[in-house]
Image (tube, rainbow over all chains, first blue to last red):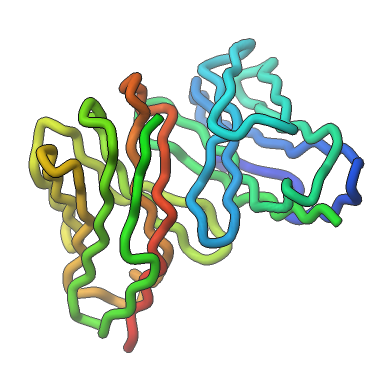
Length: 110
Length: 114
C-alpha cells in the first residue's frame, strides 16, 4: 500500500491564482482530512469528509473548497490564492481514531 | 471548541535522559488523547494514545499519563535516543466527543543531544 499520497510536493502561486491540491489514499478509509501547518503552530483542520459525497468544515475553511466523489480521492481547491494561505498542507485518512498523514504540500503565495 | 496548550515549545535532552511534554485541554468531556511524532519533512505519525478511562499507558520507552481532574496529559520518553529527535504534537477532540476533529497543540521540538 502506498498509504496517503499528495501532489504536488511544492508549489508557488501568485496572488489571485487558483490550484488544486491532490490527495489519494489506498487504504479504503472512510474518513479523510485536510490540515494546514504554519511555522511554530500545530495542525489546523480545514475540511474533513466522513465518506464519499459528504464533507464538512473544520476550524479554518475560509478560502478553500473540497469535494469527495470517491472513497480514494479528496482534493482541496484554492480559488483565489492569498499570501495568508502560504503554508504546508497535509492530507490524512482514518478508519478508526488513528489518522494516517501524507507527506505534505508546501505552498507559497507571492 | 477544544483548547489545547502544549509545553514546552522546545526541549533539549542528553541521550539516555528522559523527556516529558505536557498538554492541557479545556473540555472535561474529552475522552481521547493521541500523541503524534513528526520527523523533518514528513507528515505526523501516531505514536501512542490514551482514553479517558485509564490513567496511564506504556509502549516500550514511551508512556502517556492522564490526569482528568486537572485536565492535562503528558508524554514521557525514557532512555532517549537520537532518532527521538522530532516535533511532537498532542491533540484532543472537540466537546462533541468525535475523535475525527482533533485540535492539535502547537508542538514541541525535541532535540536529543549525543
